[in-house]
Length: 399
Image (cartoon, rainbow, N blue to C red):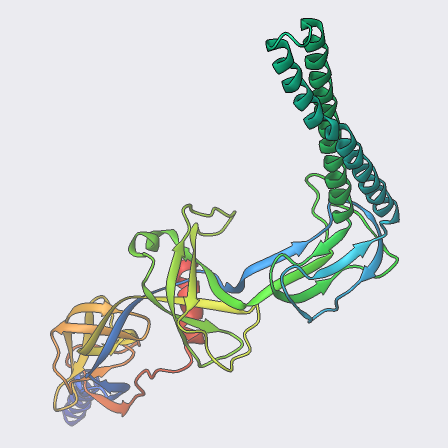
């Protein structure tokens, strides 16, 4: 009997211990908590792939004819003015042809003067003979001879003038042939690259085959950022929108700019998202910053800006809800109405108040309404280097 009581008592104790272990409140869950604050929220669009800083004017110069380089008058990095002679091929044969053409033009001009000089005198004689015929002092036959002489002189003059025009055209053709051997700067700029040396031969590019330019000329006084934007964002863009231009060479800095062009077509590339190329200019160009064409760049277009609004870190949201802490450090799930958002901040229009404490990582395991937590202060997003955000934006847009 006593043994049965002991077994019953032991069983009861075990049941009580199991119930306690099962139904006891769980230990407070450690969570990272941030306050709901007021501030600025922006709606932005960012390029899907890295963009490029480009020069407004860049000419990859080549000659229309081949030949041997006789004179190379510039060096890489040199600043040149518009019209500066950069390079000249061996052209003594063309220069001689030009000299011959000029001599022939001068001879034709002399022949024209010789042929045209008697024309005035011949027509004066024709007028004089016509008067004599009217007074019956000369015969009609003499008038015919005077008229024929004047017409003959006039025809000879016109033929000489035509020959002179031909000679002048030959001079222009010879000059054009000579100019084909001379490479001049079409605009003021910097010589970026030279592909050739004195005594080397250069050849023009065959049709459909691209070859290296002899001289690469860049005007670095005007630069712009070019970047691809996902096609779904294109309808929201228009020239004039403010932008922030980010350069990998200057991390942590954003340069103000303005959207100036949106491509009129969508680019299609295999295994990549379809994009629209946009261009943005600096407003103004940053002083004292050594900008170089070819820098990797990102263009962040500002679609809208809301200032002094209630906001939370975007990562604190999950399916339109947040976890808010009660005064006794328990969780409650709150559905919110959102407004503008980006990868850092989301505007809250309804559901929260300033100072509310919310969980920064709502997706972690163990979160549930009513659960007691042990809060630990988190860090709010701060302005600064946007490299990580832009990289994430490119990744999300290209996914």
